[in-house]
Picture 1: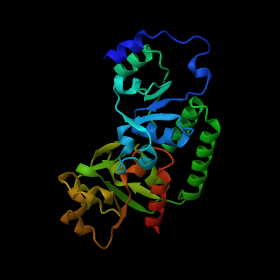
Picture 2 (picture 1 turned 45 degrees about the vertical axis):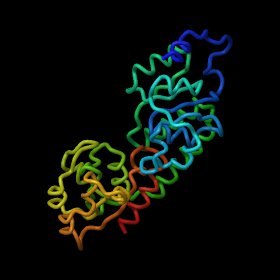
Picture 3 (picture 1 turned 180 degrees about the vertical axis):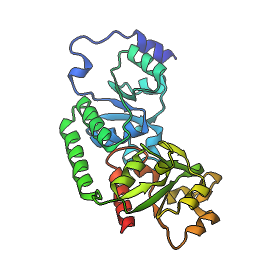
Picture 4 (picture 1 turned 30 degrees about the vertical axis):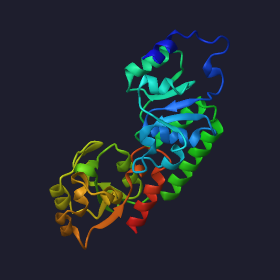
Length: 271
């Protein structure tokens, strides 16, 4: 706590506010914000990302993140990096934000992006905060191009079920729900009224008789009770009519550029 108290007592610097210049030492403490900042930041501009950004199962940018210090959302771990901008989700870490702001460190609080449109808006906003507007526009333009190229424009071609660890699923309003619709599939969980993130019993999957079963094959690389459903004998009843596609969680856990790798896999599974 000593470092925190010292930081709170430091006088603010005179002259132009931090927002008048591009920040040089940026920290993000949310996995999805990490993914955007890692793509947007200039070399050396990003000095801290959440520890989850280093996990290759969750983070599509894990290799790039390994060169950057991992942090947790604690005041000391963040202030130790001497940031001149910390980017938070607006609905989390209220206490940490209050203390860090009191220490004179500028904060950027942004909403959660739950769709491609929201991700595009967030990329532009973070890009502006980093002084990287051109890079942000480049990323958004590429996202829009890929969406046009990969979106299925005909009627839905089949029903898809998404099974995740602990028999979780992605329901209505989730990123995966949008990706399924864009690729020409109805989402069984959404049809059943499951919102965003919920549970999908195997019985419901069998009764729904989906045309496509979306799994994260990487989840069973180190088998555990949470992921044993991937090899569950009950799923054998779908053999012969249901196609399987493996989409790593890192491609759909956050809305953003990495979703298009998932969209390509779904498009291939539709053929």
